[in-house]
Image (cartoon, helix red, strand yellow):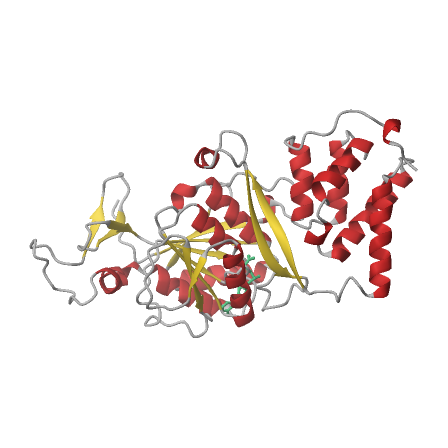
Amino acid sequence: MVADSEFGGTAMDPSLPGCKYLVSAILAMEPSECLISHARACGGGSITYQVQQFILDHCISKPNDFYAPYLNNFLKKLITQIESHHGTVLDQFYELYAHYITSSKDGSLGKRDSRIVKRISFLFPDGCSDVQKCPHSRVLTFPLQCSLNMLEGDTGCSIWPSSLFLSELILSRPELFSNKLCFEIGSGVGLVGLCLAHVKASKVILSDGDLSTLANMKFNLELNNLNVETDMLQRNEDTSTVKCLYLPWESASESQLQDIVPDVVLGADVIYDPVCLPHLVRLLTILLNPTDLDFRGQLTSCKGHSPNSIHENGEPYCKGAIDRSDGRYKTVKNDGCNGQQKETPVAYIACVVRNVETFNYFLSLGNQANLDIDDLTDSLKPMNLLMYMQSYNQADIKLLRITCSHTIRLQ
Ligand SMILES: C[S@@+](CC[C@H](N)C(=O)[O-])C[C@H]1O[C@@H](n2cnc3c(N)ncnc32)[C@H](O)[C@@H]1O
């Protein structure tokens, strides 16, 4: 039995980084070992009374929000850890643990659900530009429904490390994505799309070739208060609207994509199945091919006018140009309708190299397709906004920047 007077001391400050890590780790359902290690760090090496009280008040105060077997497992490990270091365990932890044990025996915990909601929190350091936009929030949290089975939905119902990496990139370098038409392939649970909408991409289009993944993705977008658009012909300029496309790479065709001229193409953990890679490379070539840009741009922006139509101001509706303004040469599109120039599309593909042969196969297919593939792993590093996650390591991720070599290069 523990009497409060036995301990005393001041309560832990939830705004301390260690406390934020602990709360964020449990919301993201990090493994118990990770939670225990954060709890120890908070207590300067041991899980003190104050740390236990903090866990009770701030981490598991609403036990119904959690997947019961996860909390049960955490409590078991927490109690074992404290006892094995001769500490005194809070009575409430024993009570909660006993409740779970009894409920799982009499079946009142309900059947084990294969879908769970993880809450992924991005923790911004002081002075981050994103924080200036939302001064009251230094933490950005997205709830995401995922599957406990990593292979469900053709692997698309789990959060893979490369999507965490691309999300960190988007949130730490918003200027690369804001006001741009962003198109993601193999979008899975939709986390990258949520980050793109957060930094105000002009349009976010997510896609996947698995129907159950697509349904789960739409659920997640709505869970995060975004509108979902499924009709290709529908035009919604509202940046809180995200378009979701069923797009198996094998059947993707130029005509299906003719209305879409992305500025940025994104893909996280999509390089893993050698059978799909030729189709993936063909899709990238369609999306990145600037030789079609004028024509495809016209379909998007100048619908109803032939390629040679002349605007009433005497200018053609659609024309290509070379922009030398920043000292570099790039193909640009002047759509003639609103005078805006479009840069050559670029793809950011993040991946974990699990099999070198598969990765090299992707590189060789890209080479054959005249894609320029640059390794930006060392030069474009996102901020580490997920410091609390021990199941994810930025250093495991490779970042590729891909453009199409048909781009006119003048030096
Ligand atoms: C490993 S998961 C990555 C999901 C998500 N991008 C992430 O990083 O969390 C691969 C994703 O690509 C999709 N995918 C795999 N092969 C595909 C194909 N041939 N056509 C379309 N989508 C495919 C899967 O459905 C799945 O959503």
